[in-house]
Length: 119
Image (cartoon, rainbow, N blue to C red; front, side, top):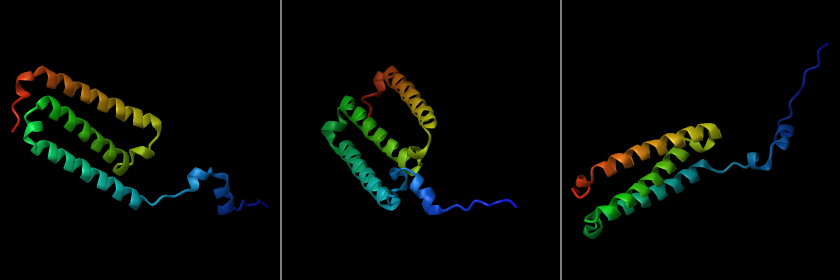
């Protein structure tokens, strides 16, 4: 006769570390991220509408780029669940983004005559 193992769910939960058992509401997290994204978007809109900032491309573009990068990281890390992926996949994604930003920077610096042509 073969003895069958019975699994006790409470025993499995006791074996897990305390951090793995804590469940935070994802709805609250998504709302916080949504509010942060709305605030960053409002800041970007304000930066673009203020004539003194808009007239100075050397200030406007880097600030908008950093704000957009923050929004990108929030969206990818939270809504696309990259924060839950293994580290190897995160590093592949991060190095690809850094490479793309490097290419963008080279192309941006290669055309200095176009920097002042905003709007």
